[in-house]
Image (cartoon, rainbow, N blue to C red; front, side, top):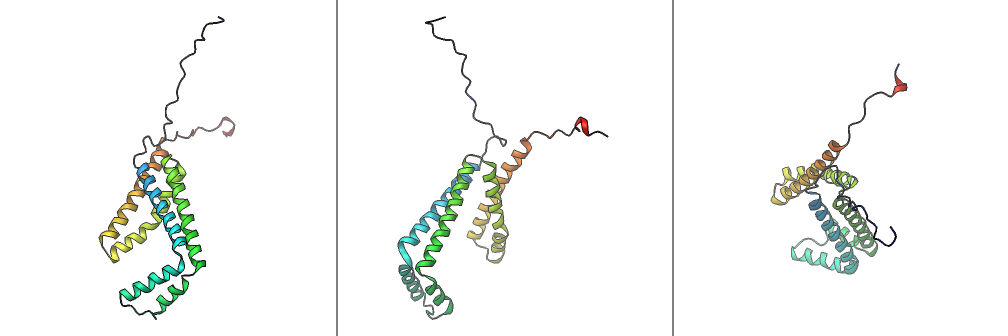
Length: 181
């Protein structure tokens, strides 16, 4: 009818997309942790560029004098010589790349992306043997804490990946009609 307001069917608002893992408990916590690591890496990169090699070399010599170390020791001389503008720029660049990876992973985990779970799970699992070695060679609270955090991250992400796999539809195992002998 002209002039009357059309009667629209109620618009269906799609529910929030249900993910294969249901609620991703723990993913947001891991995402925040990865985000924090990315921010710290960015701050470190910026700090290296702002401070520069001359100040860092001065700090190195101050620490050497404070602890009464031999300033002529080969390692300290090599470190002092390595603190140059090129090495500082390289270290800052590596820190920026690391930060970008952590921030990208954090974004993916926050949005419950499977690729981010894989990336984080593999990335954290790589460190576990080294952390176990550290716990056995010098057992202190820091070694245990780092091992516990990384083991928790691997567990959360592996649990999410397993839940995604369980939620996939079962493949149709019936043979196609033209394939029978």
